[in-house]
Length: 353
Image (cartoon, rainbow, N blue to C red; front, side, top):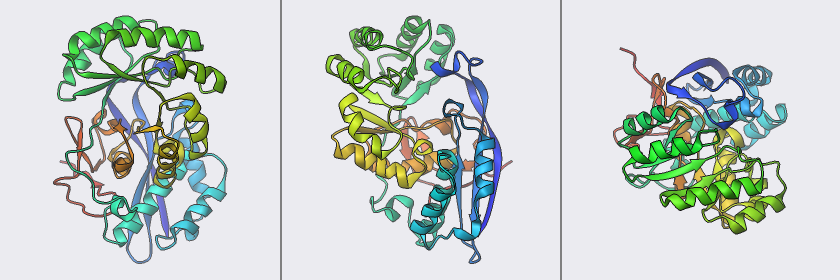
């Protein structure tokens, strides 16, 4: 097997900031990812992507260091369990790098089987005109957030990042421009106590158009604090940073009503699927989310959509230079209709010119 990887800088359509960025330079306009390509002696290949986050101490450099330790001769499209077990053994952590390899291995194996990834995984055909994703608005000034809301007019569900000193002004600006669209809120752990979180959630509930609140508090707070908030919250709570792996499902069942699974957190499609299934077994609602990502990662996640109640797979429409074509986002609705590739991730390099 040949393993190649390269850094690719995704250019954001708008400056991007979330609550955890505010004390560290205030956000970004470029987001580096790492693209992976696996090819075997039979001419088969698969692609993957790592979208590392500084929030978890990751970068394209940490991904490259991990990939340099991998022996490609230990990887095979014909032995997924053995290959994935080897990848896990190389070093602890490194979820984004493992995610890229997991996706590339599954892409190659599903292509070899001549099946779309969702069918290869036993989830059946992708349900067209069924899976609706939210569109995310990063933290900005109220005027810019209003302008972003107007620009996002085709999207019926908006996800608003909160956690700044101007939360209320930002929310007012977005609501005035949203025209009654459904709103979701993500605080990215900005509210540091259960009392502060409850106060903010009660305000959001009073507005009447907020569907749920994601990650209101830091994941490090005691389970008892989360259970206290869950019992009192007038809106459903979703855990993101709180839910890293399937092993967190039982704790999350005490803390929140639902969880946000991201492939780069769990380490790929294989563990992402396990995390979704574990959450569902605990009676939790499920959502698939993303970082800033190209169509490689977004398409990979879309193949798991049958296991979700909600989707937040908009990373590829937040950028201007997607290097791949894959699942399409048509006003929030995810679709593979008209996509030329019929197997694996159903992605291919974007033609230039």
